Image (cartoon, rainbow, N blue to C red; front, top):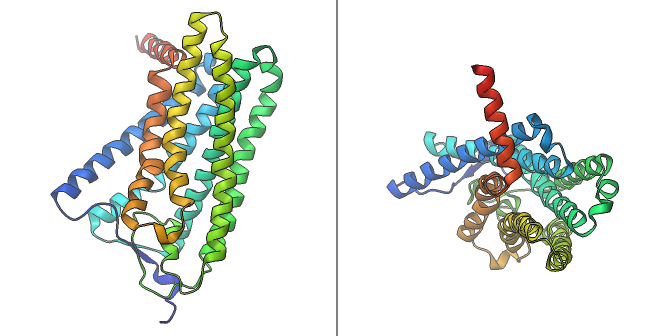
Length: 311
């Protein structure tokens, strides 16, 4: 078969079947998208407006919200547009841009979650050293490093993947341009690239997860030896919220990308992708706001301040 012209693009089969059940799932995803946009945007604005939240912990959280907001906005609008219009096509350039931002944000978010775990580890295990170890300069370096590493990794993968000759059907059995789903269309052996995907996933997902697990192992020991009951409750609450986010993000991501292509199915890949592309961006602001007294307190202060201005 001959290679297709790159200007012709691809077709995305999508996530929903053309039925009433598919329509119900589509409406549910749109509602989740709106909740994610509202929740993450609210967290960013709240952290920016309230001076009580101008700390490294919430600065990192604002970056997580920004990543989640960009993450879900990169995927769901195009998926919704394709479903409503019935036109499943996506141009080659648009597919490349979507793939680039997905990989960049995925890598950056993995690193920012690790940075947040380190922040909590220092705050709980070395509270007296916290202002030195997690200074504004260190916080900025962690955030900048996460964005740069994620972008460089994404650039390398995207350039390579979109220079592979595709000579089979242009139909991608997925709801966005995820590189592993695209590799099934390649007319060359892609084992070298699949190995690089395995390596980058290990570096940006597995190793940070191990670091997070080690950090929280030390945190749990420190909490166990705490004398203050109130301090224990606060520490447990903070750790449990972060571990919830970490589990929903890392587990399906690692399970998808560390398995050989021969053991994967399109249906399973799409179901797992929903967790780290749609559900996690919606859950993050809920977990970090509803279970965080400081965030709820800041929200009350902002609402009271706004109401006083209106009056």
